[in-house]
Amino acid sequence: MATAASENPKTRLRDLGLDREDAVQMYRDMLVTRGIEERGHILFRQGKIPGSFYTGRGNEGAAVGVSFASKPQDHLGPLQRDMGVHIQRGLEPWRVFAQYMGRVGGPTKGRDGNVHIGDIKLGIVGMVSHLPAMLPVGVGLALSYKIKGERDRCAFAWSGDGASARGDFHEGVNMAAVRKLPVVFIMDNNQWAYSTPGNLGYNTEHPSDRAKGYGIENVVVDGTDALAVYEAVAAAREKAVNGGGPTIVECVTLRMEGHAVHDDASYVPKEDFETWAAKDPIERTRRFLLDSGMTEDEDEEIRSGVKRFLVEQLEKAEASPEPDPSTAATGVYASPEELDTPHH
Image 1 (cartoon, one colour):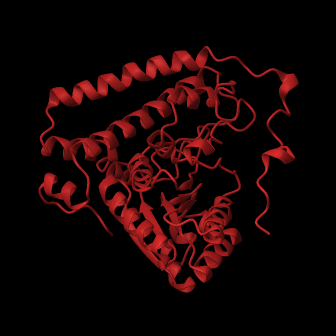
Image 2 (tube, rainbow, N blue to C red; image 1 turned 90 degrees about the horizontal axis):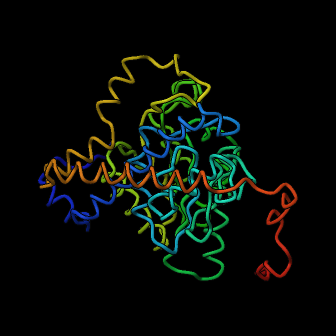
Image 3 (cartoon, helix red, strand yellow; image 1 turned 60 degrees about the horizontal axis):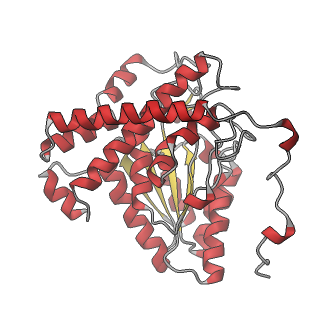
């Protein structure tokens, strides 16, 4: 499993083409991500979030690492465990809170599920529930780049380990492989497909090992190591945009909370939680930064700043009104003048 080398932190960053400020930004993005979801739990218990509620605790490093390796011209299709992608790409937290509560300030203006977040202006395609339905979408985007001759554009399409058993995963990966499309497939292997463990879901050491059947490469990386994820994804993107075809990058983590708020995850062995809690991606990045010269005072300033920022963002979201029922169909359907002329 690929992981960041245990060498001098400054040397490691230099080798990746990053600097300390990049690592600090990753750390802050992860703190914001977790802070949003922790406050989301509170909002749910207060009865302010309709429906269920999903989080990605333990997945912050993988989400931020992938997004950091993308370019502004790329499109990304993250899932419910990948809030860090939205934050790293620039989605304001108050809009996430507004989405949670079904307010007009959310990306879907109160018209979709509370974690169905997307903003095409940020290059993020809104999530579709039926996983891995985002894979064919990502492949379609990559195909459009190739048809239009748009070089140095890459699509990123996510799935989970469990979702990789579905037919749309096969169809998407197979088409991308055959046509050598500029797409990187991100597999969030959090080891549980709801309550089904990995050994009952695939008959390979890693679910991404099935890439060999499509004639493409896979990389297995420690998803709690944001820098290792960044390195693997940056290399996969470089390969994709230069005609080398897709790669499946498998980020191994553990889902540190239940499938959703209604699930206590009692089926997960306690020792697994203890093992992976010791690899917490935020604490891991914090230790890396302390080793690279960040002081405890600087760390406290970052953490307290994030807390103040999120308090302000939540207040802004709660001031956002609920949508007017008479506008329910507004923005749901595109008008003919809004559509591009089909390429054919």
